[in-house]
View 1 (spheres, helix red, strand yellow):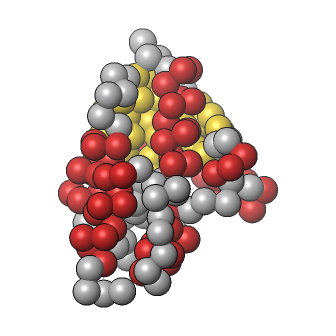
View 2 (cartoon, rainbow, N blue to C red):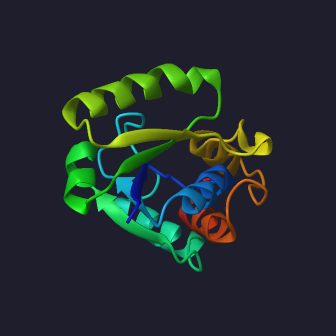
Length: 163
């Protein structure tokens, strides 16, 4: 069975993340979307790990090949424990590549049997990031075009009274 891990903070999940999930499901028999507990890219998340998992589970409802899990610790250890063959990473722009390339090489050094696969989202999602979505939502802007409905509701609930 071809099993892949798609790790990230998903704070919150965006339509770009969902696009990568759908693309990865065409390549693998099962995809574990792993929500990182200690993500180095963001010092603090708007949503707790449990909230992010709940939002992801709602967003991925109906995608039979997807399972959502909590990731704590080294990604390669998690992937090895799950029996994964690959790690899926999304690349939006050239600026993402250097960091992702370094991570892929380090992961390969630690676990040579697990490949890293880079997937690009559709062009209309290349500008999209969770950070930008949160900023728009904090400033009272509409985020319906950028995130699934469950994330729109979660953002509105989380930010009510804070906007």
